[in-house]
Length: 310
Figure 1 (cartoon, one colour):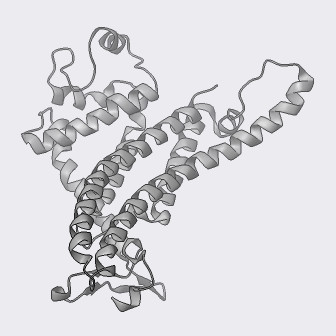
Figure 2: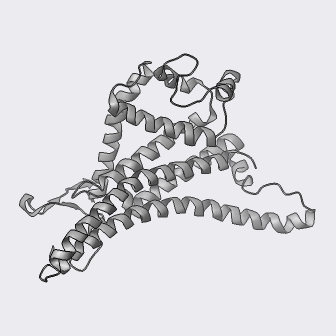
Figure 3: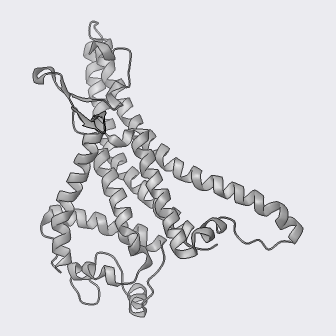
């Protein structure tokens, strides 16, 4: 479109419309909603975030009902998503946020593999239904980590659908996700150590002479406090940069075709560009899962750091 000719990033920016093929009208404009005397404009990424939430609800609502009733998941589709959820639980959240407190669970950990296998003769569905009674400290924060992982994953994957986009390619979206992670870190720390204890815990105890502590403690406290905010800020920047960067590369490769459309190079550039886009697209599918995992893993580490004394 002519109005986008000088903006090579328009395809990864948020907008008040969806771009469609010309035979479908070219653009699907989104309405604005009157709210408290103002016009609240719906945007593409707002709609896609709702879509990601609905996809999560549709997939896991039925799966959760079966597991809560002690029934194993049925079919390859449900088993795949349960496998992903159990991987996050057993390989990210529980190992990072501590071990079981119950003696029988300690024996299960030491004597048996824990994860998607059967535990103490129970079916997998029964074992998972009993997770909320297991007393594992990590299970308290598991719903938040699961929500982050699957929400980010589906937002990422929507970018692989033509004429849609990835909301996680917008710094405002990833910034709010990072802010939620920071909030969960603070809540976890305040719950375990107290609100004041959370901030005091940023500076580890020093085995040093008093005069040295007088110099080092304020310095370390400032460094650790700033580092706490930087770590969560990096969560937002990493996710945003990876998703936006991938889509930008695909857009640039597609633009090569238009640049040589009126030259003899078109026959050479077009197949090379298409093959390049296919390769980058496959890489983007991997990155969609990887970045959701990285965000969930780092958020879990930050929660553990904030809720455990040095």
